[in-house]
Image (cartoon, rainbow, N blue to C red):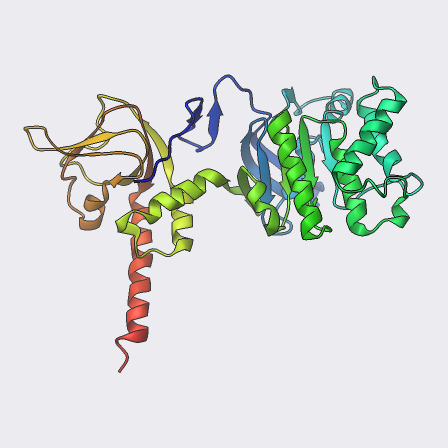
Length: 385
């Protein structure tokens, strides 16, 4: 049996499967966010009714095909574009309807890392990084600006190149200067567009380790647009955009736990790893309270259940006889879905219980794929004449 206890301070929103942290305000809250380019007949919608909630200290990686709206969403969150439709609150500031002065003040608390570097060619690496401090931390003295810039350059592995100008640096070194500039003023939000694209594996790992420390130690929210599969392990969540819409928002560590739990369910033993990953994304999370049955005997089967945390009692008949107790990692509800018959038992929570549920249609789809795979293998190896 898999032990999968959740921290008590963590709850889940049954609708979104995102974490709810008690007493903590989201650092990013987007509601029905839309965006358009052009006007009149040339007007084209590029973002469609997007909802997104991000908490302090989370690292979010945004993926998706080119042209899906990732960079547009990133620039809206960073107030580099004005919100046209929908609501967007970032770091406690409503960006929808904000005036220019408010947006300029807001940007000082954001670290931007651009794929194109945007370095000043006439300035050294240290001077380029210092500029961020001069704009965002004017209360520091000049010597403090220089010390902080040099320290950050050293952390990204450029301590030996800090006095060089951009034309004397390689593409990867320029990118690291841009990363140092985006982090040096210790922003509460970092927005990065392909930050590791020009970096080798070692330099890229140095950068993501730095971002992880920033998130963990300072509670910085970090959003990264990337196609770099080497850094997916740094993410707390992976948000996928397709054609201007958020198609999935996966809790990475939670998804791994779910997939492991599903793999231990004998009902899915013939399902491919790819299908298990898809099932994990289709699960909804529910909270069951003591005294309220999760399913009742003789009711039609409509969902499959996997226990995330807690204990339940499976009982049958008028005598209310207990058949078995189930705990974290166990599952129930599959027989009615497999046979088409009514539920053959009632399941009562013995304590507050977190459950993953899979709809009847998604369960049957997974079973169909399993059957199709078995048929194809049989035809390929055993039924040939």
